[in-house]
Length: 557
Image (cartoon, rainbow, N blue to C red; front, side):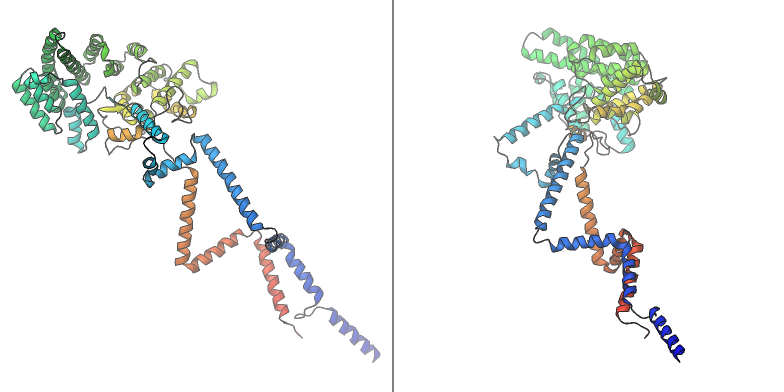
């Protein structure tokens, strides 16, 4: 009995010591809790820290300090961003914001400023400077309206000339081909009205009326050659008739020039007419393949009328000499006109670059140059290309055929897209003729922009690039042409960031309102991806469920 009782007590003690499923011993609960929390210590410390901060938020005035610290942090980041943007682009973020937002706000600042205020004076000075920078010039190689521009319209149905461009030509015609003594000759009176007509058929009709009054009216032949002739051959015939009449009138004016100021004005007018006729005859000869004849006419013009350098006849001569491949003569012309005291043009700068490129382009290789470095001749060629690109950065894309060409306008803006089109239209063939010239241009032209990071404020070899070229070029070039803009106006980073942030926030709000359940699932999935230790969190959730079950008293006894 005693043994049996002892064995029963031992069995009871062993049963009491062994863990029975469903029971909740104190020691096992703590061990399992400690094991479950071992992997989430960092998360618990983080939660405890947040709880402590929340409890001490009032005595420590954390809200006010956090707001002050946040504003200081934002101010510091803004200052760093502004410094970086100014260092890179040469202008502040505020100026960029005003330039982009002021047109949307109606430009109220200029309307508020008083007439005598310094701001209004600065604006007027800036506008005068822009007007001087955006002076348009007659295109030295302008095409014929009837034989070229109108034929383009017949084929494509597009108008290659803008009203602004043709209006400038009408003003020049009135200046060159009229004077105060026109009332003395009935034919000149009719032609004075003809140059003011906007409708081409009306101008042509007036020219025929002038010829009925005077068969030797040179300006009437000029108008018919420009606008009625449909081929270059017909235009040349009319210009030859105009030359015969113009020379007769010019000799008569020379004999009477000292009689009165009116006769001097008449001589100037007749001189302009004669020079214009000879120049257009030279251009007709150039287009018809008689290049040496064209060169002779141009050289004679430059010798006979040296004061008329403003007509830029030397640019016509440069193009004709390049067609003859008379590079020594081209260099001689450049030596005379590529002077610091004379106004530059794309034709002068890029022709100088072409001549220096010609000496090294055939054997130039980018891989070889990167290994051994550039020779002296190659350095001179690259510097000439950089000089030309700085003067007019729009030209390379047309020469490299990265942009399509259109017919050049009758007027150009120096350093603008219109000048680039006019140059590339006539000179692209000369660059293609020299082997490797376009390859050297393609490899080096973009290096120019590293030397002039602030193009609108400071130049390298020329004055800073004018900021008004885009507006003037849009007036000169037809609407179907995509105007090249330099430098491109790019919105700053903070505007892109703000627009993207606001757009994404609005999109999330709309989707949450329309599809709350789907967005809730999406949010839970995103939060699940952001958890640092998903295995620890899942283990903690399982242990917590076990503890809840044990606390409910789920035992076997």
